[in-house]
Length: 473
Image 1: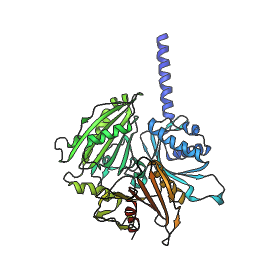
Image 2: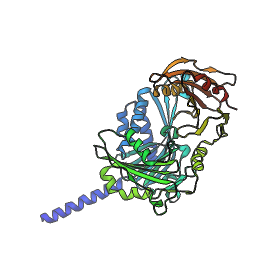
Image 3: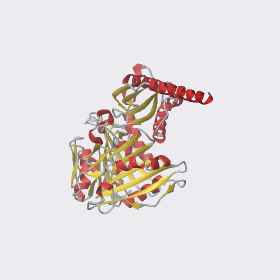
């Protein structure tokens, strides 16, 4: 009798569990709308704890970074928050919503300036529970570089960049999230988030100004990004699996592992094809990385170059030119995409640079008298337009970052072309190096140009004379 009772209780328990499981609804766009409303109200409350109550994050470190950004925004002002669902899809039991969220300062309408609003695009991933939707991931995304996502049934999971000369595959267990170049400081960066496990992989594309040496690049990265508490493994040779049998001339690579005290592991892989560097950063709990290594290896193993016979010069210029839309011939730079053409000092070494700008050109004096750079920048992340305030902050931040002392500041003045111009003279305490900046804000094109001259005090006048020669045509 007792045995039959145990069996009966087991059957009742199993049946009850099955019924409970069946009662949990599937994610729908209607459920997403309700969850997004709760998300907006939590942000409007100004209490980050209310936002925390909506999530059981699958990717804890990525969630913490996003949480820090939101927490900083909430401390800076009281906001009215409105999110729009730009796209929605489901993968198994998960709902994926692509959102455009607008933060507007909570002030009197007559004082409200649209330029004070912050707009972010992000993925909100959730699963359903008995109590409703529960968020597992909130990741900012660059919609201007949005590859085909699981929401839009990307074919065979293949994606990549013709300009950066690579292809990689990821199945629908991974959410693919491209990032804004101005935020990551490289040609492009894409994150792959596992939708089943707390694993992620970032791929970023760089131009190595110091030559095609992946070992040196990884050594610099480890030296600058690790702490004494972390355990850094040895650097080993590594070639992407698709190219191991027939490695293209000019390709090389290395890898290393970094273990944190809290059982967090980062596996870093760097491969170079000419001066173009591809960095893969695999991250996750040490146990999860071990158990699901095959899933990571499948993505890494799919990476391949589109073309393998590019010469060094073409390989260097192609990704920069295609991403920025400009070309450099001698001292003359032309960029139809931004609408500028200018000539730098003749006889100086001119180079195209990459990382976080609409374009970046440098000129170096052959006798080491000085260096001149020209950068063009789009409005800051989250802003639709440049304002004098945001342009001031961008230039002042650079001065603070380079530990410079301001000797003279003209403030912003409007010229005959309707542009706002600001000039600053600064010096560095450590060696007296003089840096002179000119900021040009074009309110029509919504582009901030920053001219930066570096020289000794004696050579500064001759270097800065090129400021006027770099006016746009």
